[in-house]
Length: 584
Image (tube, rainbow, N blue to C red):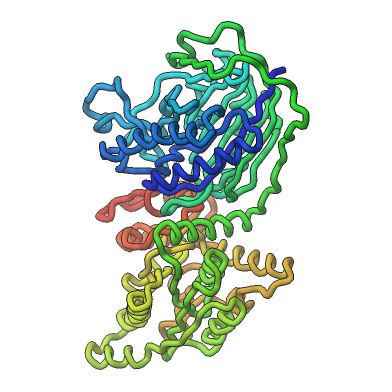
């Protein structure tokens, strides 16, 4: 059988950085060529970054993408890399689509091109456009209507983009019709908990449907709230895994494939879903047999908690680096949430770049102050104490606040202190709230909700504890000091805004709360369905009302890394002004 050395480059790019992304593509193409690759691929919209959102509707950006693609093709040839075909994603526009209502202005397309010998030899656009969760591709793009096939060293390779695999029909069955020996799909599919298992089963299923080997190339890194976990996969026609890349690591997956020879006559005509087969021959002659074939390897899988923790580290690091922040600042209370955020920050950018402030009030316990100091000692982060008592007394002398207003004043004084230090010293403030609190509105606007990024905003409270324990266990396994004090993990959580306060004064036990939140927020179950699942009716009504009335707070919360299928924000969009309540 003919052979092909395939290079899948799962790289980290930045939206809008056309020059920097081009440099990265050239660098990894050179690496691939040096390893003897015959076909080199890069992820979906690697040239522009993903997702570009409303930049897709800006004609100047579309034209800049097209110009950068042409320049990239020329540069590859000029630098001696023109003989190897390169598949790269970019932003294009349709030349054929006619303006009409309901179609994005300018007919932009989520596209990919094959670059060879200084030219764009073939381009095509994503056929299936996702319109769920964080994806708004019907808003931004018009679909492609071809099945692109390139012949490389006597092998026909069909090409697809991300959602073309996730939806039934379209390019997958069309690949079988065209008789291709390999289906190559480039992707920028964001990370979600357990998505790696779903992805593997999908790739196996589509390979069997396409009737050929399937290569799934994914992106790594982070973009705003999204994290991309790599995990590129190549499977055989029977669904057997040939190679699988590491999670959350940038790199080149190199594998030698034995693939069926292309038919003498190039495929043509119309395939499934009315897709017109568009074929280009790049090299017709098969390669001689390899002297030392590169066998695919399967990278070790991360455990569930390690996977989530790594996603949070990668997401924070990407946000900081790509937005020019070198240091972060957070309030370190001695509680579990701020302790986990501090650990994530230290792992993301190094403890020397993490600044923490303890801001005790008259209600702060000695053990909380001690736990915060112990966390700083264990990690080596920068630590200081700024008591808020004098500020609190000054405000109370003027305002004479009581009850909740008095409690919230303490939170807002801490928020003001953090923002003042941020302005003075140039650190990015990290909000430390978790998803359970955010769901129920258990946070103070302009208080503990202040910040530029919220690393654990998509992490339920029970998972916060799991991640803290995992991080400590991982440290012990490596012979290191566990970063999080045990007392921060085991003590009852409290905002410490009044004497003897604990979270369960205002919220149900977190184990119960998170189970209900999972049904209501993650699964969109209504009141009756949740009650039918065995939960107390009064508790359900109370929690759902808390969630519904806190929408205005969530809208004002900082961005943060998304790890679930239903993160607050683009995944779950509800009106602030809303009189609908479950059950009337």
